[in-house]
Image 1 (cartoon, rainbow, N blue to C red):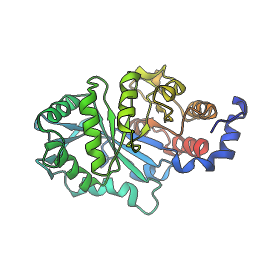
Image 2: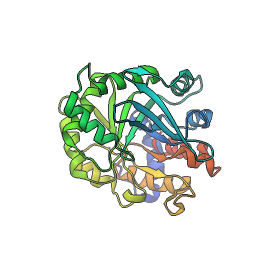
Image 3: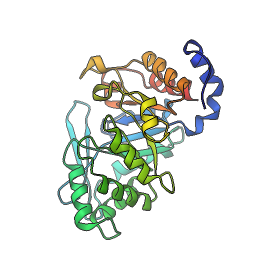
Image 4: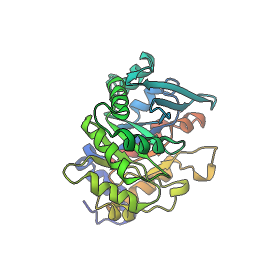
Amino acid sequence: MRLTCNLQAALACILTLGSAVAAAAPKTMFLFKDVLQSNTTALTTSGFNTLLIFRIGLTDAGDLVYYSTGDAGEAVDAHVVSNGTYTGGSALSDKIRSFKTSPSSLVDRVEVSLVSQDTTFQIIRDLVASEGTGSNSTLYRNFQALQTAWDFDALNNDDEGVYDTTSTVAFAQMLGGLGLKYTIAPYTNQAFWADAVSRLNTETQLLDHVYLQVYDGGAGNDPASWKSALGGMKIAPVEWVVNDAKPYEGTSPAAARDEFAKWFAEGSIEGAGYWNDYDVEKMGSSYTEYGGVLTEVFG
């Protein structure tokens, strides 16, 4: 859908047409903070419909570890799957399941993010090459155990360095066989991601959302350019909230509203979101204001 209104009137037009796209619009928050310490009520009632748990990493043996950040900024590492068995404990799994099941929750989709901060994608590449992705493989058994315990809906790929096509496609197709969707959070290398989209979406839309980084290394990204490069897939740009790690990269709710409204008016995006909940809570910012921007623009 393309809007013909000028940018000054963009928000008004968006609000008028919002109901036509509301069901499909991802309104996201990346969860950098330990979910056992974050403000679950605010996260689930402030307008977000998609939460992305940052992050799961793999050990050399293929075991899964939940890496997050605590209230004081300390690392919180929890081994959650070993040899096909969930080991993360019921408190963690119950909390993650509650994102969608609590009576007042607006969240209908939970994703788990894999990132290139460690050797995770090298390990996936090597395990795909050595074992494949069949039902007896380490990857299949461990991610099946995690999905059963956490009841998440999609796996988010935030690869920023390995970019191995063979293992990326095989791993995503394995996840599809487990009933999961696949999403990406790129900031560069359009050609690689375009190839992945074309390979994964030949029959069904396995790769169904693109959370484009438009901050820090991706600050110059244009959603329209990415939409074109990825064969017409609409984009959900991700801004960094107000923070003290890189204050110059922080975006206020008002600034986010202006940018999201402009891109939506141009027809380039289908939704949007933010990195990350830890900074919202640390800086005393408002989940309601950030989430309200998304419901105001996207319905």
